[in-house]
Image (cartoon, rainbow, N blue to C red; front, side, top):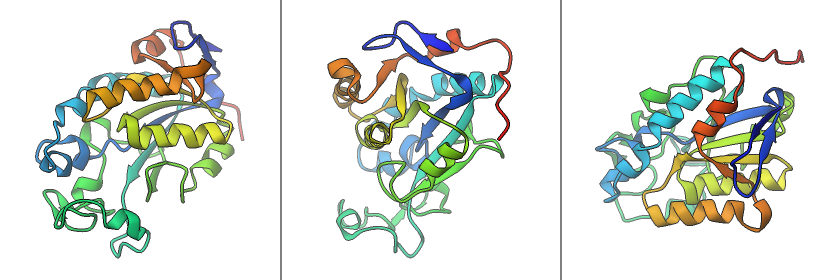
Length: 230
């Protein structure tokens, strides 16, 4: 077992063989200068601060054989999987499916929809394409995790108060134990980030635990852990 003693609201322990690192929506349109997020007036620097610690955590996770799963938010080119309540959000010409700085906004297969180069998934790392905020809604994530015997999630990605928070709540309802890495999740709005993390750890960890990625990297073993055969 790996124990993160300084986690909030208390120590968090996990077994590498039943834990996955979940990397949520680290996509070009959200994080890169000139992308869709910046075109809305957001400071992408607030999200980009997560890249270096997340890259270090990703390398450490891969080194010990931790399962890694990535997600991308986006829709089919014909938008048939995008409900009207979501499709109508945003200013005209800046809605899902409209032409954006890096291709059609939040459409699968477009340049802006893909994951940033710094965190490029390895060939054997699943990428879950999700049509909603939460990573479990209308995806096979729960099935994939069950097939791998996963019961705990190290949660990273963007944004703290939207896709990360929704996914953690979904995971909690399904019985997963979640540790959210504070320096590996981010929001365009610092206050939303702070309060979002406080909400996760409140009331004795109502949705999960919170810690810094350096604490996890320091606690990981120095050699790969043999995964159980399926």
